[in-house]
Length: 386
Image (tube, rainbow, N blue to C red; front, side):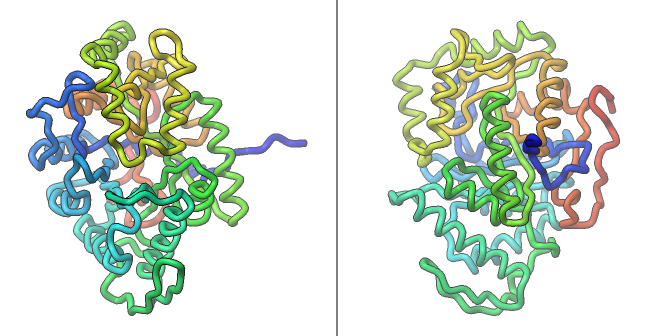
């Protein structure tokens, strides 16, 4: 029997989408467990990081969503959009927060402001103040996505579901991107989440795990998408600590954790809306398997997960080690990377200096024909410099 193969949507791409993170949900710091006022999430701090990433050549940036500690994602994205030049915005939306036709209109408006540089991160977490089953949340998300797609591609929304019954013309909500609207990025590990992504979304985002576990996740998603007659791309959301030498990088990782009290870490992890999700539990499981310094495999450090919910590991090493790790991920089929670091602005600059010039980068909306290719892929391969 022949071995199964992971099939990806952008098999032809030789480059990858290299993205950074806009901390509009607080948490930026010099030491995990502390939240200095100078790093507080506000317009000045978050927009400076985003605009710096744009100037440095990152192709996308995640604008997350978190009610307790965050700025509003779409308001922030709409304000910063006209100030950007090349970067895409990956705006996170919690399905159910906004009535779907109005959400379709808001996203279409933002897509026009960005001239097609909008991508959308679909989130199915509990809405603030509510507690619902995973099945309920994913069923609602499926209805929201189907309504968005009708609004963006048809002359009329004609939908009758469990949560929404809508019949409306769609003329006011057509996006700038005409071949299906903005790309939909999705992260979820439960069977219902995997099924939703396989049927409707474009990029399956994963949190860091060992290469073997990531490969298993990709195979499951690839098979599930094939059952729907589809292909998806794969993305990895992971933190980054890169220095000139491995010793410097590992020392910085230790410094980052040097002021964290266990109880404070537990408080931070448990305050998030997704703190009890299956994906978060997988991050916790990875920490239990790591060595005494927190490394689950070479250059994959799990210490960050002791002080935050969600994405709980970082790549730690020198530029050559980081490039080699990214190359292995690319060979597995990953075409989108979302990096972050502490503090975000400084680490954004360090990665752009030490690693980004050696990477061939692409914009996934352009690569998939969602908008005119006005900004061509950089002609650099691994190991080449601008």
